[in-house]
Image 1 (cartoon, rainbow, N blue to C red):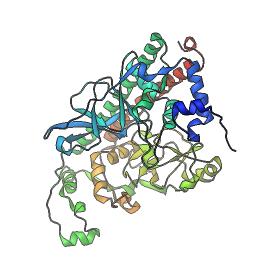
Image 2: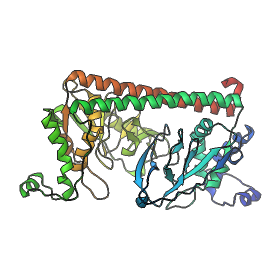
Image 3: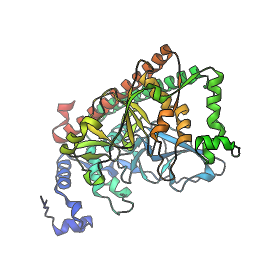
Image 4: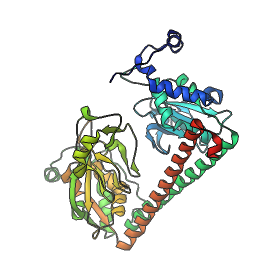
Length: 454
């Protein structure tokens, strides 16, 4: 059904936009609600920060890229890069309490709050950087995580090949400021969420350390050789002639494990069944419906809302029996970003893509959480890095997956490691829960009043 929206000429001139999508009723209704709630432009309560990065030869810096941001929690990984190798998009120096907001699609909801000051911390040019002026940093961060803000920012997107918004679009975003008491309540809730996330990372790190200590690899620092040789018989046996496959660093781990008498078993020894996901075709993607879980929507911490695609209820019902992951299933990516392993913690209504394998693991032989950690660790990563082929998109073949070598430790150590991983996931679950409660509080304050929330 066609949707109509009638706009005054004066409003067209003010916005300098004549594209119909800009004036969709859902946008206009949302803006009206925010106006009634007394929202003001972000530029009234925060400064834009443009500290231009000037790389120096031989100096290292930590670089924040949009693709390395957790879209749910705002956590991020950094890449350590030396000055002369700095990419052109490494542009802004950031400090404590800066809020980074993605301006590019499809990753619109990459929002980061810099909680601690650090020298040589730089972010991508794809971020708009704000610093609070008369508002609490936690509150401003959370506000930009609100789903309706992503929708409003999408409204301003221009260009087709590289769709993006500009800094003025961010600065003119309407924000509900609320009272100081309301901001403080939200900020304290966010502090608790951040503390739980920190605890989650610490527990996971303890599990990784316990694994590496048990395997005698705690001090492992693989050395990648620039030149090396391989026997012709080895190339014929492996059916590979690409030099990377024979990188000595890969064999170093296997050698050290054997020296420690660590038993290595192929993954197939633990698999009861294996099921590849499905590709229903992009023509079946929808903006709403049941989740279509692609490789980009899976992380070692669970499901991620990154450029999420959806399927119709009808198609979902047709596919769910075979392709819907169940609680306790072991998921493993094999394409694009191969080797992400995750044990499903909660039931989800969705279908996995063909780039994801759904495994049933024999728990009498190995602990599933221990197995996932092995694959996600440097041990699994290096083996998978060796196996994978493909020049544009990496592919990890099912027969290679089954041959993946898994180091096995005594069951009591496996259980100790698994317990730490489970505690890590539980702390993360609670942190996300607090995040959602805080978001809901802001929604209710905008729609009704603060008193009800307080």
